[in-house]
Length: 333
Image 1 (tube, rainbow, N blue to C red):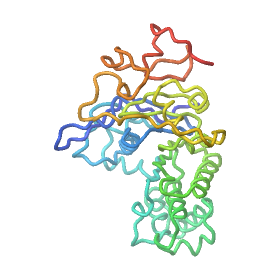
Image 2: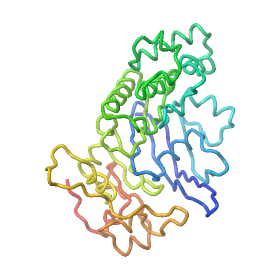
Image 3: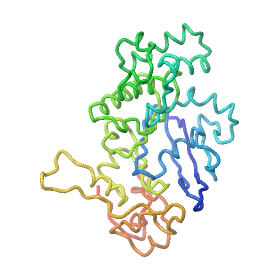
Protein backbone atom coordinates (compact mmCIF):
# COMPACT_ATOMS: atom_id res chain seq x y z
CA UNK A 1 0.00 0.00 0.00
CA UNK A 2 1.09 3.56 -0.71
CA UNK A 3 2.24 5.65 2.25
CA UNK A 4 -0.19 8.49 3.02
CA UNK A 5 1.40 10.01 6.14
CA UNK A 6 4.99 9.76 7.31
CA UNK A 7 6.13 11.19 10.64
CA UNK A 8 9.91 11.26 11.16
CA UNK A 9 11.75 12.06 14.41
CA UNK A 10 9.05 14.43 15.67
CA UNK A 11 9.96 16.21 18.92
CA UNK A 12 7.60 18.66 20.65
CA UNK A 13 8.25 20.57 23.88
CA UNK A 14 6.30 22.96 26.08
CA UNK A 15 8.02 25.86 27.85
CA UNK A 16 6.54 26.12 31.33
CA UNK A 17 7.53 27.86 34.57
CA UNK A 18 9.42 24.80 35.82
CA UNK A 19 11.37 24.28 32.60
CA UNK A 20 10.97 22.44 29.29
CA UNK A 21 8.43 19.62 29.16
CA UNK A 22 9.60 17.18 26.48
CA UNK A 23 6.12 15.91 25.59
CA UNK A 24 7.04 14.11 22.35
CA UNK A 25 10.54 12.76 21.76
CA UNK A 26 11.75 11.50 18.37
CA UNK A 27 8.47 9.86 17.34
CA UNK A 28 8.41 8.15 13.94
CA UNK A 29 5.64 6.17 12.24
CA UNK A 30 3.71 6.01 8.97
CA UNK A 31 0.14 5.39 7.84
CA UNK A 32 -0.73 3.64 4.57
CA UNK A 33 -3.72 4.46 2.39
CA UNK A 34 -6.87 2.76 3.67
CA UNK A 35 -5.12 1.61 6.86
CA UNK A 36 -6.29 2.05 10.46
CA UNK A 37 -3.48 2.67 12.96
CA UNK A 38 -3.95 2.92 16.73
CA UNK A 39 -1.72 5.00 19.00
CA UNK A 40 -2.14 3.71 22.55
CA UNK A 41 -0.69 4.52 25.94
CA UNK A 42 -1.65 5.92 29.32
CA UNK A 43 -2.46 9.58 29.94
CA UNK A 44 0.54 11.84 29.42
CA UNK A 45 2.31 9.53 26.98
CA UNK A 46 2.20 12.10 24.16
CA UNK A 47 -0.59 10.65 22.00
CA UNK A 48 -2.76 13.76 21.67
CA UNK A 49 0.22 16.12 21.33
CA UNK A 50 1.48 14.00 18.43
CA UNK A 51 -1.91 14.20 16.71
CA UNK A 52 -2.32 17.93 17.27
CA UNK A 53 1.23 18.52 16.01
CA UNK A 54 0.34 16.76 12.76
CA UNK A 55 -2.64 19.12 12.41
CA UNK A 56 -0.55 22.11 13.62
CA UNK A 57 -3.15 22.82 16.33
CA UNK A 58 -0.95 23.15 19.42
CA UNK A 59 -0.59 26.80 20.51
CA UNK A 60 2.86 28.35 20.16
CA UNK A 61 3.93 29.54 22.69
CA UNK A 62 4.09 27.60 24.97
CA UNK A 63 4.65 24.70 22.54
CA UNK A 64 7.58 24.27 20.18
CA UNK A 65 8.04 21.70 17.42
CA UNK A 66 11.76 21.26 18.02
CA UNK A 67 12.55 18.93 15.15
CA UNK A 68 11.14 16.38 12.79
CA UNK A 69 9.14 16.06 9.61
CA UNK A 70 5.46 15.39 8.85
CA UNK A 71 4.94 14.37 5.22
CA UNK A 72 1.34 14.09 4.04
CA UNK A 73 0.88 12.92 0.45
CA UNK A 74 4.51 13.92 -0.06
CA UNK A 75 4.00 17.48 1.23
CA UNK A 76 5.81 18.78 4.32
CA UNK A 77 3.10 20.05 6.69
CA UNK A 78 5.45 21.65 9.21
CA UNK A 79 6.71 24.18 6.63
CA UNK A 80 3.27 25.23 5.33
CA UNK A 81 1.93 28.69 6.08
CA UNK A 82 -1.16 28.94 8.29
CA UNK A 83 -3.24 29.88 5.24
CA UNK A 84 -2.12 26.77 3.36
CA UNK A 85 -2.56 24.61 6.46
CA UNK A 86 -6.21 25.72 6.68
CA UNK A 87 -6.73 24.15 3.24
CA UNK A 88 -5.53 20.82 4.67
CA UNK A 89 -7.49 20.81 7.96
CA UNK A 90 -11.02 19.56 7.55
CA UNK A 91 -10.45 19.01 3.84
CA UNK A 92 -7.65 16.48 3.39
CA UNK A 93 -7.28 15.60 7.10
CA UNK A 94 -10.29 15.43 9.41
CA UNK A 95 -10.14 15.26 13.20
CA UNK A 96 -12.54 14.05 15.87
CA UNK A 97 -11.78 15.56 19.28
CA UNK A 98 -12.22 14.01 22.73
CA UNK A 99 -15.19 16.03 24.00
CA UNK A 100 -17.87 16.80 21.40
CA UNK A 101 -19.73 19.17 23.74
CA UNK A 102 -16.76 21.56 23.90
CA UNK A 103 -15.70 20.94 20.29
CA UNK A 104 -19.08 21.82 18.79
CA UNK A 105 -20.19 25.46 18.73
CA UNK A 106 -23.26 25.75 21.03
CA UNK A 107 -24.53 28.88 19.20
CA UNK A 108 -24.71 27.28 15.72
CA UNK A 109 -27.01 24.57 14.46
CA UNK A 110 -25.54 21.19 13.65
CA UNK A 111 -26.35 21.79 9.97
CA UNK A 112 -24.44 25.08 9.86
CA UNK A 113 -21.38 23.42 11.41
CA UNK A 114 -21.35 20.58 8.88
CA UNK A 115 -22.02 22.95 5.96
CA UNK A 116 -19.26 25.39 6.93
CA UNK A 117 -16.41 23.14 5.77
CA UNK A 118 -18.27 22.07 2.63
CA UNK A 119 -18.83 25.67 1.53
CA UNK A 120 -15.24 26.67 2.33
CA UNK A 121 -13.32 23.67 0.98
CA UNK A 122 -15.63 22.15 -1.65
CA UNK A 123 -17.02 25.44 -3.04
CA UNK A 124 -20.61 24.16 -2.75
CA UNK A 125 -23.56 26.52 -2.64
CA UNK A 126 -25.85 26.47 0.39
CA UNK A 127 -28.40 24.08 -1.14
CA UNK A 128 -25.69 21.60 -2.21
CA UNK A 129 -23.99 21.83 1.18
CA UNK A 130 -27.30 21.21 2.95
CA UNK A 131 -27.98 18.12 0.84
CA UNK A 132 -24.48 16.81 1.63
CA UNK A 133 -24.98 17.53 5.36
CA UNK A 134 -28.22 15.52 5.37
CA UNK A 135 -26.39 12.70 3.60
CA UNK A 136 -23.58 12.72 6.21
CA UNK A 137 -26.01 12.64 9.18
CA UNK A 138 -27.78 9.69 7.58
CA UNK A 139 -24.41 8.00 6.95
CA UNK A 140 -23.41 8.19 10.64
CA UNK A 141 -26.75 6.78 11.75
CA UNK A 142 -28.66 9.83 13.00
CA UNK A 143 -32.41 9.33 12.40
CA UNK A 144 -34.56 12.02 10.75
CA UNK A 145 -31.50 13.98 9.54
CA UNK A 146 -33.51 16.76 7.82
CA UNK A 147 -35.05 17.83 11.17
CA UNK A 148 -31.87 17.21 13.16
CA UNK A 149 -29.96 19.55 10.83
CA UNK A 150 -31.83 22.52 12.35
CA UNK A 151 -31.11 21.57 15.97
CA UNK A 152 -28.33 22.74 18.31
CA UNK A 153 -25.68 20.53 19.99
CA UNK A 154 -27.40 20.66 23.40
CA UNK A 155 -30.40 18.89 21.87
CA UNK A 156 -28.30 15.80 21.11
CA UNK A 157 -27.13 13.06 23.46
CA UNK A 158 -23.41 12.42 24.02
CA UNK A 159 -23.30 9.58 21.51
CA UNK A 160 -25.23 11.59 18.92
CA UNK A 161 -22.89 14.58 19.37
CA UNK A 162 -19.94 12.28 18.71
CA UNK A 163 -21.65 11.08 15.53
CA UNK A 164 -22.06 14.72 14.48
CA UNK A 165 -18.32 15.23 15.02
CA UNK A 166 -17.63 12.23 12.78
CA UNK A 167 -19.98 13.70 10.15
CA UNK A 168 -18.15 17.05 10.26
CA UNK A 169 -14.75 15.37 10.05
CA UNK A 170 -15.75 13.20 7.05
CA UNK A 171 -17.94 15.69 5.17
CA UNK A 172 -15.18 16.68 2.72
CA UNK A 173 -14.06 13.07 2.13
CA UNK A 174 -10.62 13.48 3.78
CA UNK A 175 -7.85 11.02 3.00
CA UNK A 176 -6.99 10.77 6.71
CA UNK A 177 -9.16 10.84 9.82
CA UNK A 178 -7.54 11.43 13.22
CA UNK A 179 -9.80 10.29 16.07
CA UNK A 180 -8.51 11.52 19.43
CA UNK A 181 -10.15 9.27 22.05
CA UNK A 182 -13.57 9.44 20.32
CA UNK A 183 -15.23 7.13 22.87
CA UNK A 184 -14.09 8.89 26.07
CA UNK A 185 -16.93 9.48 28.59
CA UNK A 186 -19.36 7.34 26.58
CA UNK A 187 -20.91 4.16 27.95
CA UNK A 188 -19.74 0.85 26.49
CA UNK A 189 -22.83 0.39 24.28
CA UNK A 190 -22.38 3.80 22.65
CA UNK A 191 -18.62 3.15 22.39
CA UNK A 192 -19.32 0.02 20.34
CA UNK A 193 -21.75 1.91 18.11
CA UNK A 194 -19.28 4.75 17.45
CA UNK A 195 -16.45 2.33 16.62
CA UNK A 196 -18.78 0.39 14.30
CA UNK A 197 -19.70 3.64 12.51
CA UNK A 198 -16.01 4.49 12.02
CA UNK A 199 -15.18 1.01 10.75
CA UNK A 200 -18.08 1.04 8.28
CA UNK A 201 -17.11 4.49 7.01
CA UNK A 202 -13.51 3.37 6.54
CA UNK A 203 -14.67 0.42 4.45
CA UNK A 204 -17.10 2.51 2.37
CA UNK A 205 -14.92 5.59 1.82
CA UNK A 206 -11.41 4.09 2.00
CA UNK A 207 -10.37 6.65 4.63
CA UNK A 208 -7.16 6.05 6.59
CA UNK A 209 -7.62 6.33 10.36
CA UNK A 210 -5.35 7.21 13.26
CA UNK A 211 -7.16 6.15 16.43
CA UNK A 212 -5.73 7.63 19.62
CA UNK A 213 -6.81 5.87 22.79
CA UNK A 214 -5.67 4.53 26.15
CA UNK A 215 -8.16 1.67 25.87
CA UNK A 216 -6.70 -1.36 24.13
CA UNK A 217 -10.14 -2.94 24.13
CA UNK A 218 -11.45 -0.63 21.38
CA UNK A 219 -8.41 -1.25 19.18
CA UNK A 220 -8.78 -4.94 18.36
CA UNK A 221 -11.92 -4.65 16.22
CA UNK A 222 -10.96 -1.58 14.16
CA UNK A 223 -7.21 -1.20 13.67
CA UNK A 224 -4.63 -2.96 11.52
CA UNK A 225 -1.49 -1.78 13.33
CA UNK A 226 -0.73 -0.54 16.84
CA UNK A 227 1.83 2.00 18.06
CA UNK A 228 2.46 1.96 21.81
CA UNK A 229 3.74 5.22 23.32
CA UNK A 230 5.24 5.80 26.74
CA UNK A 231 6.75 9.02 28.15
CA UNK A 232 6.65 10.74 24.77
CA UNK A 233 8.30 7.90 22.84
CA UNK A 234 7.29 4.95 20.69
CA UNK A 235 8.17 1.83 22.70
CA UNK A 236 6.56 -0.85 20.52
CA UNK A 237 4.97 -1.12 17.09
CA UNK A 238 3.46 -3.99 15.14
CA UNK A 239 0.25 -5.47 13.80
CA UNK A 240 -2.59 -5.78 16.28
CA UNK A 241 -2.08 -9.56 16.38
CA UNK A 242 1.63 -9.15 17.17
CA UNK A 243 0.88 -6.65 19.93
CA UNK A 244 -1.97 -8.62 21.52
CA UNK A 245 -0.60 -12.14 21.07
CA UNK A 246 3.14 -11.56 21.42
CA UNK A 247 3.87 -8.25 23.24
CA UNK A 248 7.60 -7.66 23.63
CA UNK A 249 7.96 -4.46 25.65
CA UNK A 250 7.38 -4.76 29.42
CA UNK A 251 5.10 -1.70 29.27
CA UNK A 252 2.88 -3.27 26.61
CA UNK A 253 2.64 -6.46 28.66
CA UNK A 254 1.75 -4.36 31.70
CA UNK A 255 -1.06 -2.61 29.81
CA UNK A 256 -2.50 -5.96 28.71
CA UNK A 257 -2.25 -7.45 32.21
CA UNK A 258 -4.21 -4.55 33.65
CA UNK A 259 -7.21 -5.18 31.35
CA UNK A 260 -10.09 -7.47 32.36
CA UNK A 261 -10.51 -10.52 30.12
CA UNK A 262 -13.48 -12.76 29.34
CA UNK A 263 -11.45 -15.86 30.25
CA UNK A 264 -10.33 -14.37 33.57
CA UNK A 265 -11.24 -16.28 36.73
CA UNK A 266 -13.37 -14.54 39.36
CA UNK A 267 -10.63 -14.62 41.99
CA UNK A 268 -7.87 -13.61 39.55
CA UNK A 269 -6.92 -9.98 40.26
CA UNK A 270 -5.97 -7.36 37.69
CA UNK A 271 -2.27 -6.49 37.88
CA UNK A 272 -1.65 -2.73 37.70
CA UNK A 273 1.66 -1.28 36.51
CA UNK A 274 3.54 -0.16 39.64
CA UNK A 275 4.92 3.35 40.03
CA UNK A 276 4.26 6.48 37.98
CA UNK A 277 5.48 7.82 34.62
CA UNK A 278 8.71 9.86 34.67
CA UNK A 279 8.87 13.64 34.89
CA UNK A 280 9.31 14.85 31.29
CA UNK A 281 10.94 18.08 32.45
CA UNK A 282 13.88 15.86 33.41
CA UNK A 283 13.38 12.57 31.52
CA UNK A 284 15.61 9.64 32.46
CA UNK A 285 18.95 9.20 30.68
CA UNK A 286 18.19 5.55 30.01
CA UNK A 287 14.95 3.68 29.36
CA UNK A 288 11.95 5.74 30.50
CA UNK A 289 10.18 2.62 31.80
CA UNK A 290 13.21 1.38 33.75
CA UNK A 291 11.98 2.45 37.21
CA UNK A 292 8.70 0.53 36.77
CA UNK A 293 10.13 -2.56 35.06
CA UNK A 294 10.81 -5.83 36.89
CA UNK A 295 13.21 -6.90 34.10
CA UNK A 296 15.43 -3.80 34.27
CA UNK A 297 19.22 -4.20 33.93
CA UNK A 298 22.09 -1.79 34.43
CA UNK A 299 22.22 -1.00 30.72
CA UNK A 300 18.57 0.14 30.97
CA UNK A 301 19.49 2.76 33.57
CA UNK A 302 22.39 4.20 31.60
CA UNK A 303 21.29 3.90 27.96
CA UNK A 304 18.03 4.53 26.12
CA UNK A 305 17.27 1.59 23.77
CA UNK A 306 16.42 1.98 20.10
CA UNK A 307 13.60 0.05 18.46
CA UNK A 308 14.84 -3.50 17.85
CA UNK A 309 13.08 -5.80 15.38
CA UNK A 310 11.49 -8.82 17.06
CA UNK A 311 12.22 -10.93 13.99
CA UNK A 312 14.48 -10.23 11.03
CA UNK A 313 12.60 -8.49 8.25
CA UNK A 314 9.41 -8.12 10.29
CA UNK A 315 7.49 -4.96 11.17
CA UNK A 316 7.18 -5.87 14.86
CA UNK A 317 9.72 -3.88 16.91
CA UNK A 318 10.17 -2.80 20.53
CA UNK A 319 12.49 -0.38 22.33
CA UNK A 320 13.85 -2.86 24.87
CA UNK A 321 17.39 -4.02 25.62
CA UNK A 322 16.08 -7.56 26.07
CA UNK A 323 15.68 -7.67 22.27
CA UNK A 324 19.25 -6.62 21.59
CA UNK A 325 21.30 -9.40 19.94
CA UNK A 326 23.70 -9.44 22.93
CA UNK A 327 20.79 -10.27 25.27
CA UNK A 328 20.44 -13.70 23.60
CA UNK A 329 16.81 -13.90 24.58
CA UNK A 330 14.51 -16.40 22.93
CA UNK A 331 11.54 -14.60 21.39
CA UNK A 332 8.34 -16.65 21.89
CA UNK A 333 6.43 -17.68 18.79
